[in-house]
Image (cartoon, rainbow, N blue to C red; front, side):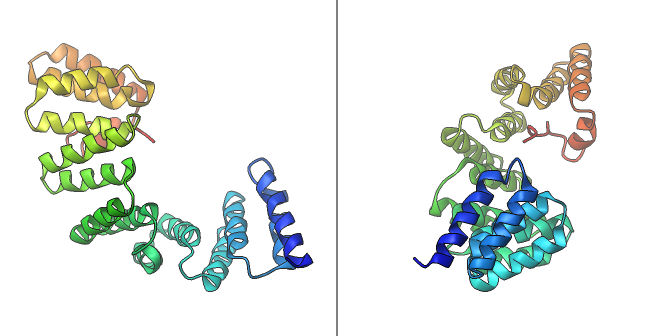
Length: 256
């Protein structure tokens, strides 16, 4: 290892140590690393991430382009580039950015690619990408997102299987847990949904959507007073919950 590479690695490690608490110093360290060795795509990505934290998004995009020129399939560069594009509403560009290295990539990258496909309405392609991600390595997030896609397409049984599998992989997957209860309501399995919503209401993270679900179940029993009480507490916890739920009539998933 040459002295220049050793110096670059030392500055990179320094940047990593201070990146969370002192991004300004991390920026200086990463730039010094690139002064010594300008062919390190990981350092460009670290610098870009630091610049995002400092609010300098245009500069960050420039360094991400540099990283991708050095390694066109660099997953962290593709993901951060896509995040910046999505934040600006540039969906097609984000899709192209992820698509360039998604197939054959990591499950996480494939899942993000599928998420963007879903957002622009390419549901068949999104389902294929989710299943490719699962084949590459299962995780609760992928199973949950596939479940949401199947639910929107009217496949309640398939969605329930995905949410249950997500919870097998990660019992703390709150989004999967809330949506499993939602699907049970839609399938008419109200007693099971009641038990699940009551359990979810005992956890801070899922209390609001669970209370919203309990309100719907109370309405179905004709217990308007209990429904009103649960709905009032839910909206007190999440003021925007009523608007969110109005989009599909289901209890919205837990905030994450």
